[in-house]
Image (tube, rainbow, N blue to C red; front, side, top):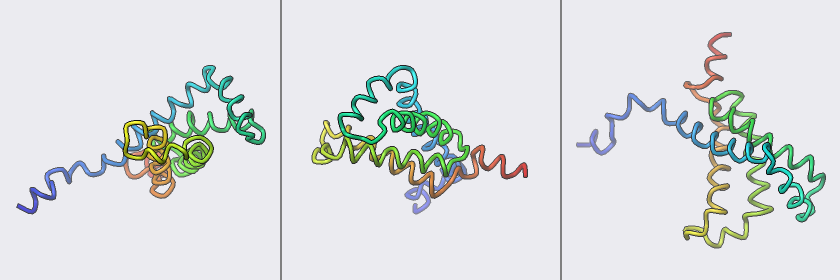
Length: 145
């Protein structure tokens, strides 16, 4: 009975849990960066200017790269830790600058504006701490050396 409650029959697939989380989060983050890279940055820069962000053009490009390149790297598990750090920093800044006020709606339908970047931040921190794991390009490269 305890094996059933612990879902032990899933144990052979345990190494695929972290890659699935990395893949989904990385693709979602990369999609945000892709939108900026394909024209959305022109709207992002004035918004950063309105928030008095120093060097808004540089900040916009850094955010776009952290999201697009960092997201893709996390998704495939390549340079996972540095990509996780870049993504975590970007999400922390986004939360503080844009989404902190939405925290009061936590758990409500309109809370997505806070909950989404918070979840991305948590997974990015996990990527920074855990690295790519055994099913990643990081592991493949390490095995090759």
